[in-house]
Image (tube, rainbow, N blue to C red; front, side, top):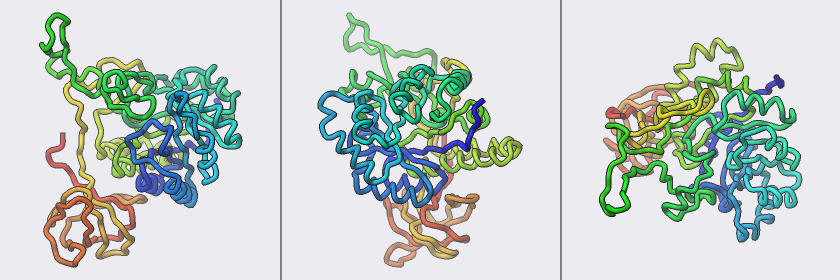
Length: 414
């Protein structure tokens, strides 16, 4: 077995705020999208100025930034691409994530000294293709979600020692091979392979017989419903030892479209799980249920371990609903450090005087408190915070720091 260095925790960053949260809450690296060539067209993404600011912030905190350019390109997409890659290199991006061979060739010529990671969109399912990408100049291969641990180990044993394996460990799963999907393009005219997926795998379907147009018959395997493509979310936080043993160097969290609360919650939980395991496997084993409980506080579907241990069957699908399980509301974020006493908070969901809330810091344990005093920007005492992104002053029982998050139990969570 190849000697395993400390694995990298790689987090999504859909905008600058999420990038900062991911880094502060424990990510070793983040992946972001620019305004072109990425597969999350509906994310806020980064222009070159905000990208430069994000890269500087990440580097100041010892983290790396990888930029997605993983579309499957058409002829018109190549105009300006080389100049874009050169601009990204100039502001300090650490790597490009690419799936298309033509885009790869542009990057190799335009920025020959820049690391290239081969996206999961390239359907990296075997060691032969990984070795071929390495010969072309790739530093890392992001393996397909459809591989078992046994297959991952075989790839690790057969590729060069200085080539990294990156794998998804948490987040949404696609119905098609590693997300290379035509459903969206066919059903809604939005090309998933160019960043505009409309997520038809989450839709509710009925059957129409050819000679009975307009007569919609339900597709029901049983009483659970008709969400026939709706996969559970991947969660591997209880399997960190197997991930490391398989030779996976970068543990990737899905979710550039997710909320800052999701990013902070999930990143922090995986950071703690990885660090505890590397410190003492017995400590990790003792705390394993706590890690799972913590990631479950972020909005999610039911969880699965995907393809890592077995081929998925019907138990990996959710038939009765396409909604998320939401146990906690993200209600606010601290805007400035406070040693104890009053601190400024930006509201994200309604809360009121008398509510019991949790304060989740980037480092250290969360603590519970009751909201007892609250003022608006004019200094008027208020009983509740109903307005989106309302700026408030709140009394805290303990010190808080900028980017600490406030969350509240959802009493009717499902």
